[in-house]
Image (cartoon, rainbow, N blue to C red):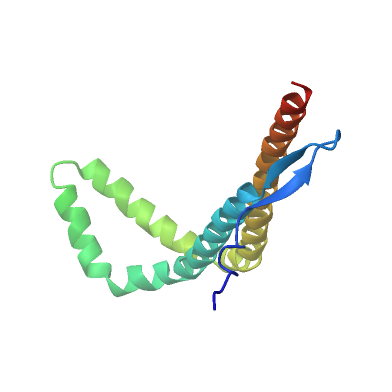
Length: 143
């Protein structure tokens, strides 16, 4: 007894050109595009979760961050001032309710657009490849 379901799994199908000539149709662009979009969507959603934890991280490790800034800027007091200002303003922006609300609602929308956009790009690639294959099948049939 053999199981043939594994051999039936492929990313190509038989299709026919406008002139009725057979060629192998591909779907790999859509599959790769969907996979890439899914990865980008997951990364976007994880970044959303991480953005809320930055403020807690800065508060928790306030002393080591201050020591690191001092060690990095021993010779340049102007740099120290600008880094401290950057950390303070960044913490205030990331902790603001407006930013949190924007991240909360915008992130899923961005993730969905990334997923849809990469699928559409993959579909465009498939369409171009399939059009070339159909033209080649027609040319081979004429010869």
